[in-house]
Amino acid sequence: MIVWGRPSSVNVQKVLWALTEHGMTFENRVVGGKYGGTDTEAFAAMTPVPRVPVLQDGDLTLWESHAILRYLSGGVSPLADQWMEYTTSTLQPAFLRMFYELVRTAPEARVLDAAALIADFLAAVPPLEWQLAKTEWLGGDSFGMADVAAGAMMYRACDLCDPLTPEVARWYEQLKDRAAYRDIVMTSYEELRG
Ligand SMILES: N[C@@H](CCC(=O)N[C@@H](CS)C(=O)NCC(=O)O)C(=O)O
Image (tube, rainbow, N blue to C red; front, top):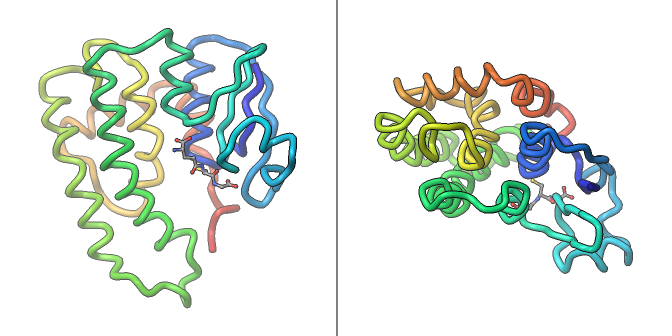
């Protein structure tokens, strides 16, 4: 399999992390961001959206990180799917608004209210606490793709604010216990700093 995308992208990290957890072999072709390569005809032939990640598996080409996670797992449970959707619709947009302003935008160019951005992200976390009070992992009793989808942004989020309510803190410790999380997600994002 080939994963197109820079490892500094949180969405690419989800795919690299999932592949590693599944013990699958793959090649990572580093494109996007400062590396370029997403504005070529060859890239446009793979996806109509010049964004990463893109997965190639033989004749199959897939984009959208959560679709790739579902494919790699042969599908996910309804509970896991629900949390992947929550991540797409609510948690990650709030995280990205915070991350773009506080990390990707140079200090002198920041115009948004940092406290409000942080508060918006923190307001998206209590539903995770609610689920994690009932189940060990977001998607149920075992680690899975919901943890990958939502967990991928927690490392950077913890640098910017404190989202670690009791059960979320327990879950985050469990994520950090995984070698693939440490190797793929808990990495420098200095290249993204504005
Ligand atoms: N919904 C898409 C979002 C993809 C996306 O926005 N990727 C970002 C990186 S996280 C990107 O490609 N940015 C432009 C670039 O890196 O060149 C997914 O989950 O795969």
